[in-house]
Image (cartoon, rainbow, N blue to C red; front, side, top):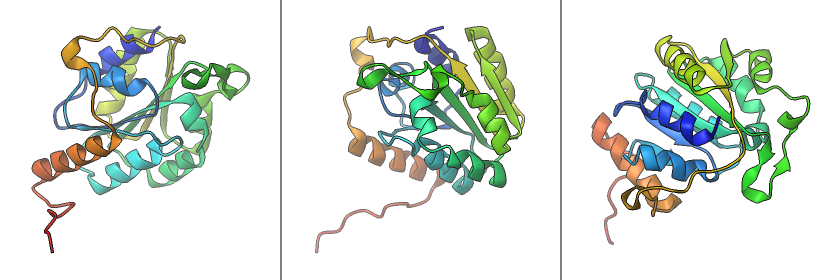
Amino acid sequence: MKRYEAIRRMARLVTAEDLVVTSIGTIKDEWYSVMPGEGTIFLSLMGGVIPFAFGLAAALPHRRVLTFETDGSCLANTGALCTIANELPPNLTILVFDNEIYEGVGGHPTHTSRNVDLERLAAGAGIPVTATARDPEAVTQLAQTMLADAKVGFLCVKIEPGVFRDFPPDRIKMSDGIEDKYKFIRHIERQEKIIIKPPYVAS
């Protein structure tokens, strides 16, 4: 299974009310091509994606929060899974796309290419709902269940190496992380009718 196929499946399950946190690398471009709205924050922070999503889920417990993580980035901060297992945010669903390599920096193998099993790692940390998907149908079925069960869930999605780049011209991501941050903040402000970052006032 290619990651883009799994991402397209996930786009059918995500609503305008959901908030999505994506990981470092080309996963950002793939997700933007199917969900270009402002309800996604595109991070380039290895090891910081799951903690960011946890903070978002804790701050907005009435909203579903999804994170699209990679195996390399997840492995950079496995302690975050322990924190989440202790706090158990019921509105958080974690998907880790595991191709067993650091594809964006040359294809060096990650630990999951040998003995490390991310689902068992999450379950061992104490996350109550865990699973591994190896085909698109399983992604749809398992993710749909996790999004509806009011429990924190961890889904490892085993994928083949390779990225998709043949996007339509109007679905190519042009913005950088700084612009993405402010779009995301304003999106939450509009939805929640709150002010997170007050407008700039020249002195």
